[in-house]
Length: 190
Image (cartoon, rainbow, N blue to C red; front, side, top):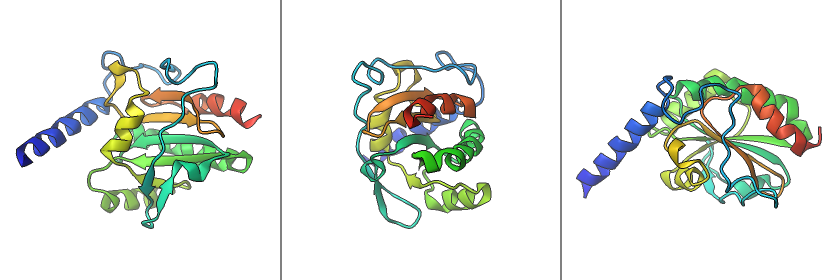
């Protein structure tokens, strides 16, 4: 049984490393202004319900998606070792500063296997000003179901969730600040 668990961890690590290698891979958007949408996310009723979760923050408190109801949420799945993920973080810091007072909440879900030992120093080093939660394979997998099948397994993957908890947009791979801004502004009414 332990051998199968190690094999699964090795396979997941290989998938994540290949997704963050910086090289364009088949089915991966080449530029930051390409938006991939899956029919499950965007529909006439305003989007699918975002899966609920309860994950620990850096203080050990459980945080749930419901805690942010009534806000527009940018939910970003990332890791400290992923170069495209690291490049997006300054955009999220700026967006939180610029739109936090208008109802935006950026939430990061870190997928580092080493946990807080690597995440906390990275948070301090980069000045992250929004909640970071320690993700699980289960929660990441539930959200990956909303990603087009040919893009599953890569990070970063990011969701824009409206005030009612519906997924309105999803992105796989690096995106620039303007891409996220274009997704949130209509929801914020600005």
